[in-house]
Image 1 (cartoon, rainbow, N blue to C red):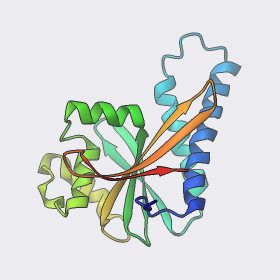
Image 2 (cartoon, rainbow, N blue to C red):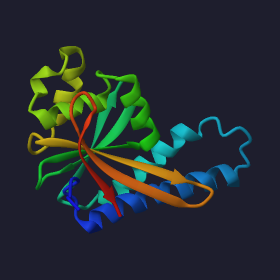
Image 3 (spheres, helix red, strand yellow):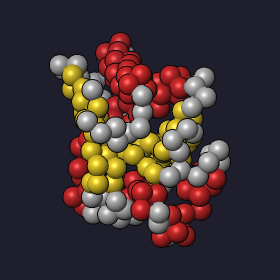
Image 4 (cartoon, rainbow, N blue to C red):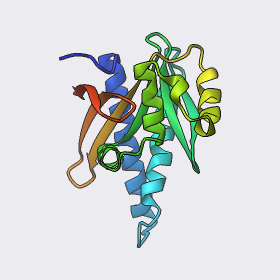
Length: 178
Protein backbone atom coordinates (compact mmCIF):
# COMPACT_ATOMS: atom_id res chain seq x y z
CA UNK A 1 0.00 0.00 0.00
CA UNK A 2 1.21 3.47 -0.88
CA UNK A 3 2.51 5.52 2.06
CA UNK A 4 0.47 8.67 1.36
CA UNK A 5 1.14 10.00 4.85
CA UNK A 6 4.94 9.72 4.53
CA UNK A 7 4.97 8.82 8.22
CA UNK A 8 6.95 5.95 9.69
CA UNK A 9 5.04 3.06 11.23
CA UNK A 10 6.12 4.30 14.64
CA UNK A 11 4.80 7.84 13.99
CA UNK A 12 1.45 6.44 12.84
CA UNK A 13 1.23 4.46 16.07
CA UNK A 14 2.15 7.54 18.11
CA UNK A 15 -0.66 9.56 16.54
CA UNK A 16 -3.19 6.79 17.14
CA UNK A 17 -2.02 6.33 20.73
CA UNK A 18 -2.27 10.08 21.34
CA UNK A 19 -5.87 10.14 20.16
CA UNK A 20 -6.80 7.02 22.17
CA UNK A 21 -5.16 8.45 25.28
CA UNK A 22 -7.06 11.71 24.84
CA UNK A 23 -10.41 9.94 24.57
CA UNK A 24 -9.72 7.86 27.66
CA UNK A 25 -8.76 10.95 29.67
CA UNK A 26 -11.85 12.84 28.51
CA UNK A 27 -14.16 9.92 29.31
CA UNK A 28 -12.54 9.64 32.74
CA UNK A 29 -12.95 13.38 33.36
CA UNK A 30 -16.67 13.26 32.62
CA UNK A 31 -17.19 10.04 34.57
CA UNK A 32 -15.15 11.13 37.63
CA UNK A 33 -17.04 14.42 37.83
CA UNK A 34 -20.42 12.83 37.12
CA UNK A 35 -21.18 15.47 34.51
CA UNK A 36 -24.77 15.16 33.42
CA UNK A 37 -25.09 16.76 30.00
CA UNK A 38 -21.64 16.31 28.39
CA UNK A 39 -22.37 19.57 26.57
CA UNK A 40 -18.72 20.60 26.30
CA UNK A 41 -17.31 17.18 25.51
CA UNK A 42 -16.92 17.67 21.73
CA UNK A 43 -14.68 20.67 22.44
CA UNK A 44 -12.87 19.29 25.48
CA UNK A 45 -11.85 16.18 23.58
CA UNK A 46 -9.87 18.38 21.17
CA UNK A 47 -7.98 19.98 24.06
CA UNK A 48 -7.05 16.49 25.20
CA UNK A 49 -6.08 15.36 21.67
CA UNK A 50 -3.89 18.40 21.03
CA UNK A 51 -2.27 18.17 24.48
CA UNK A 52 -1.61 14.47 23.97
CA UNK A 53 -0.05 15.08 20.54
CA UNK A 54 2.05 17.88 22.01
CA UNK A 55 3.30 15.61 24.79
CA UNK A 56 4.00 12.76 22.35
CA UNK A 57 6.02 14.82 19.87
CA UNK A 58 7.49 17.37 22.30
CA UNK A 59 11.06 16.11 22.01
CA UNK A 60 10.84 14.89 18.42
CA UNK A 61 13.20 16.84 16.17
CA UNK A 62 11.45 15.63 13.01
CA UNK A 63 7.76 16.30 13.84
CA UNK A 64 6.93 19.86 14.91
CA UNK A 65 3.61 21.06 16.28
CA UNK A 66 2.22 24.52 15.58
CA UNK A 67 -0.96 26.24 16.59
CA UNK A 68 -2.89 27.64 13.66
CA UNK A 69 -5.87 30.00 13.90
CA UNK A 70 -9.07 28.80 12.27
CA UNK A 71 -11.75 31.38 12.97
CA UNK A 72 -12.36 31.24 16.69
CA UNK A 73 -10.57 27.89 16.96
CA UNK A 74 -6.94 27.25 17.70
CA UNK A 75 -5.89 24.03 16.05
CA UNK A 76 -2.70 22.04 16.01
CA UNK A 77 -0.96 21.12 12.79
CA UNK A 78 1.97 18.75 12.64
CA UNK A 79 4.91 19.35 10.33
CA UNK A 80 7.41 16.73 9.22
CA UNK A 81 10.59 18.74 8.68
CA UNK A 82 12.28 15.92 6.71
CA UNK A 83 9.54 15.34 4.12
CA UNK A 84 8.16 18.92 4.37
CA UNK A 85 4.64 17.55 4.84
CA UNK A 86 2.02 19.35 6.90
CA UNK A 87 -0.59 17.23 8.73
CA UNK A 88 -4.09 18.31 9.63
CA UNK A 89 -6.10 16.04 11.95
CA UNK A 90 -9.89 15.82 12.15
CA UNK A 91 -12.68 13.36 12.72
CA UNK A 92 -13.69 11.42 9.61
CA UNK A 93 -17.31 12.53 10.01
CA UNK A 94 -16.26 16.19 10.02
CA UNK A 95 -14.28 15.74 6.81
CA UNK A 96 -17.31 14.10 5.15
CA UNK A 97 -19.50 17.05 6.21
CA UNK A 98 -17.03 19.68 4.98
CA UNK A 99 -16.68 17.87 1.66
CA UNK A 100 -20.46 17.54 1.19
CA UNK A 101 -20.96 21.23 1.98
CA UNK A 102 -18.18 22.21 -0.45
CA UNK A 103 -16.53 24.51 2.07
CA UNK A 104 -13.88 25.98 -0.20
CA UNK A 105 -12.75 28.48 2.45
CA UNK A 106 -12.38 25.93 5.25
CA UNK A 107 -8.84 25.76 6.58
CA UNK A 108 -8.50 22.22 5.23
CA UNK A 109 -9.36 23.38 1.68
CA UNK A 110 -7.01 26.33 2.04
CA UNK A 111 -4.10 24.15 3.21
CA UNK A 112 -4.84 21.62 0.44
CA UNK A 113 -3.74 24.32 -2.02
CA UNK A 114 -0.22 23.20 -1.05
CA UNK A 115 -0.91 19.92 -2.89
CA UNK A 116 -1.49 21.78 -6.16
CA UNK A 117 1.25 24.39 -5.71
CA UNK A 118 -1.49 27.01 -5.51
CA UNK A 119 -0.65 28.64 -2.20
CA UNK A 120 -0.98 32.02 -3.94
CA UNK A 121 -4.68 31.21 -4.57
CA UNK A 122 -5.51 31.53 -0.89
CA UNK A 123 -7.79 34.53 -0.29
CA UNK A 124 -5.80 37.35 1.33
CA UNK A 125 -8.40 37.70 4.10
CA UNK A 126 -7.57 34.18 5.23
CA UNK A 127 -3.97 33.98 4.17
CA UNK A 128 -2.23 36.34 6.60
CA UNK A 129 -2.74 34.07 9.62
CA UNK A 130 -1.93 30.98 7.59
CA UNK A 131 1.17 32.51 5.98
CA UNK A 132 2.43 33.61 9.39
CA UNK A 133 2.11 30.05 10.66
CA UNK A 134 3.64 28.52 7.53
CA UNK A 135 6.50 31.05 7.61
CA UNK A 136 7.27 30.07 11.20
CA UNK A 137 8.10 26.53 10.06
CA UNK A 138 11.70 25.66 9.20
CA UNK A 139 10.65 25.04 5.56
CA UNK A 140 7.62 25.84 3.44
CA UNK A 141 5.48 22.67 3.31
CA UNK A 142 5.31 20.87 -0.04
CA UNK A 143 2.00 19.25 0.72
CA UNK A 144 -0.78 18.87 3.25
CA UNK A 145 -2.07 15.49 4.36
CA UNK A 146 -5.36 15.10 6.21
CA UNK A 147 -5.36 12.42 8.89
CA UNK A 148 -8.86 11.42 9.93
CA UNK A 149 -10.04 9.17 12.70
CA UNK A 150 -13.16 7.41 13.87
CA UNK A 151 -13.20 6.51 17.53
CA UNK A 152 -15.98 4.50 19.12
CA UNK A 153 -15.91 5.10 22.87
CA UNK A 154 -18.17 2.12 23.59
CA UNK A 155 -16.14 -0.49 21.75
CA UNK A 156 -12.78 1.29 22.08
CA UNK A 157 -12.22 0.74 18.35
CA UNK A 158 -10.53 3.36 16.20
CA UNK A 159 -9.77 3.72 12.51
CA UNK A 160 -7.40 6.12 10.78
CA UNK A 161 -6.96 7.32 7.20
CA UNK A 162 -4.53 9.65 5.46
CA UNK A 163 -5.84 11.71 2.54
CA UNK A 164 -4.05 13.82 0.01
CA UNK A 165 -6.65 16.30 -1.26
CA UNK A 166 -7.09 18.87 -3.95
CA UNK A 167 -8.19 22.36 -2.90
CA UNK A 168 -11.77 21.37 -3.82
CA UNK A 169 -11.46 18.60 -1.18
CA UNK A 170 -11.49 15.80 -3.75
CA UNK A 171 -9.23 12.87 -2.93
CA UNK A 172 -6.08 12.33 -4.98
CA UNK A 173 -4.58 9.63 -2.73
CA UNK A 174 -5.79 7.61 0.25
CA UNK A 175 -4.02 5.41 2.78
CA UNK A 176 -5.75 3.40 5.48
CA UNK A 177 -3.43 3.64 8.47
CA UNK A 178 -2.95 0.42 10.42
